[in-house]
Image (cartoon, rainbow, N blue to C red; front, top):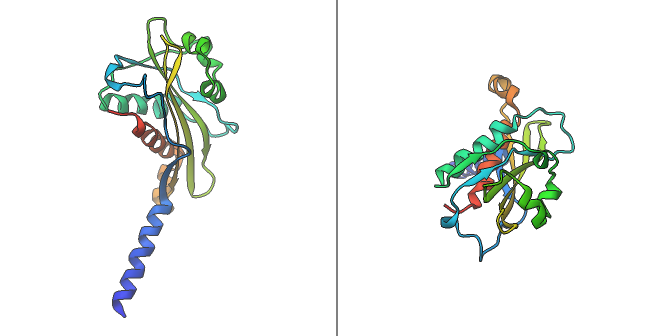
Length: 191
């Protein structure tokens, strides 16, 4: 009888852990297999992140949470990364523009000498209740050829703790979810 009692506690704890943090992709990552060779990429130019949220009530530092985190992950994977400043083209980008980018748009992105351009877009950030949800899309373009090499979208749910710990981290709500989502999203980029 005692063994069954412990077994039910373990199953309950594992279930609670899955509810507190979880990430998922909406579709498998898109690769342009014939052109996407990670070893041929010399330097990725990371453009400013795009805020594509419909509801922008929650303030987010996209520079640190999206771009900074992405640069760190890409460098850890062995890619050379340079951060590019905003331009007129990047200020007007939306998630729909990025998904359906035509060669003319791709060739205008980033500085003139850059070849591989990456853009991350924050699609959704929901910090209502005890669970934060973030959705981020990523795009890697070959500017020289005007093609999309990689595209992926990640969604993460992160449970917030209650009590004193919850009050301490409440000021940065959503930041953990965004960081986790970027980590999860860029896992599909090969090393």
